[in-house]
Length: 100
Image 1 (cartoon, helix red, strand yellow):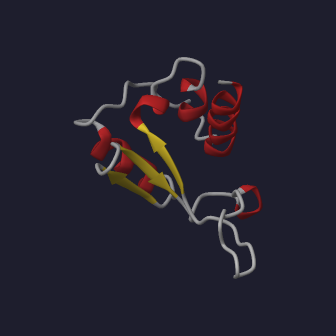
Image 2 (cartoon, rainbow, N blue to C red):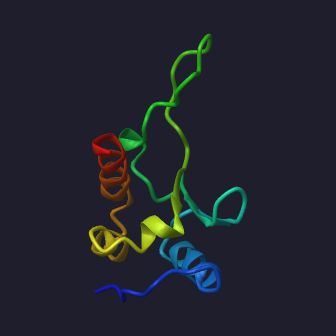
């Protein structure tokens, strides 16, 4: 069971350290947006999205996913954060963007 907590700028370093202790590559970012970059370690390579605009090189998968703090705290995906289901969370984020 994972503890749910509100991630904000001050708690982001502790959240990143927790993810690292669980085997994820995780880095906090502050520019241009505050959030966390997760991957490639701990992520399913087969579920990583294909990098856009790789032409003329062959398409390849991205190595990490970025999650803004605002997305980490969304009520509808908070349980995915707690369960460390970052691919499902990414899918929910991209679906929400395509719906708007």
